[in-house]
Amino acid sequence: MVETLTEPMAYPSERTSGCPFDPPAPFRQLQSEEPITRVGIWDGSTPWLVTKYADMRALLSDPRLSVNTKDPGFPHLSESAQVRRSGPVSFMALDDPEHARLRRMVAAPFSIKRTEALRPVIQRIVDGLIDEMLAGPTPVDLVSAFALPVPSLVICGLLGVPYADHAFFQRSTNAMFNWDSTVEQAMEAQDDLTEYFQNMVGKKLAEPDDGLLSQLITDRLATGELARDDLARTGVLLLIASENTTNMIALGVAALLEHPDQLAALRENDDPMLIAGAVEELLRYLTIVHSGRRRVALQDIEIEGRVIKAGDGVIIPLEIGNWDPEIFADPDRLDIRRDARRHLAFGFGLHQCLGQSLARVELQVVYSTLFRRIPGLRLATDIAEVPFKHKWFFYGVRELPVTW
Image (tube, rainbow, N blue to C red; front, side):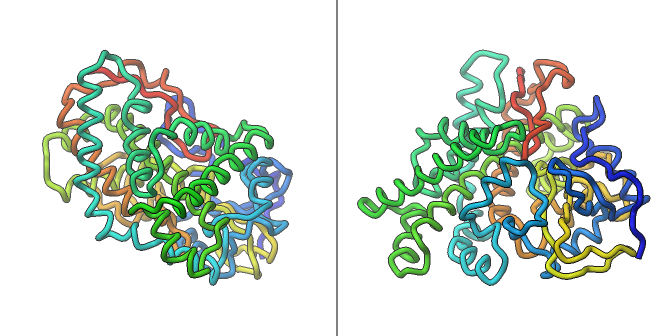
């Protein structure tokens, strides 16, 4: 089979200056010329990079690829990520059948029916935060005033943990997922969050409530189906997942403000189907998890004339798959009327995002409400001055100054 003899391209690659919403150009070129190729990562290893949408779907549903982060061939994001994953991990870093067993225990609250029932609660949260912004001075940082508290309030209420601790949550997740964090900083943050949820389990045992943690204690911990440490790690995972929605809210607002024709079409139409479609298109266009789904091969896999051998690492950058012109015509064009439902923003296969239904409801409420209630919303600075998260696991903006 064909093997590449050239020096592997480095991964990840920087975005083109002035194009903060576009995937890195070199990998878009690979998509058409060499869709499965070796790349070099931080530790000197050369995992395979997969850039075509169809190949991504095939591999993400292939049981011959594993999420086992302890395998020597697993292509870790960074040294700190490697060390963090060297100990016990959440179910998202486990293969079936253990992954399926643990995931089933927490899946019910994130079903479409249950998350739709949260829509009025989310609407109240969104309206309350907008009220506070309208009553205060401008400009305002949309991240700290709105994009961060919306999903934080929702997940804290769902889990039954105090929102008053959100500053601690934010500091910890920032340290864990900033690529520039040292191993010590990342491990300390992870340990602090795990200890927090271990203590929270103890509090819920003494004083149960109607939150998800208490429910899991009653239904799973008491029966021995779920260990206390597993429950703490699950709490950490679900809390961290809300960071995705925070970044998606702020980045989506920035993208819409830079595409006034699309913003006008969204703001002037209250059709729920259009709003839902706009959310799917924004998810496709932005794809905020931009460091690649990472796997390791358990067996040899032949694909696109290549052989991914057992023990080889594989990186699947979803943001590039979502810009595959074979699937999405004119992928670099934001079009809220596009049928983008086939996007891979939440992954694909067994390990796709557990909280995707909740994220969709949150985003639908946010985008349908924010621009209607603040029709004059605009950036308070040039887009070139907005600090983007170029070295973070979740892509987004650190701040988004807006006014009206």
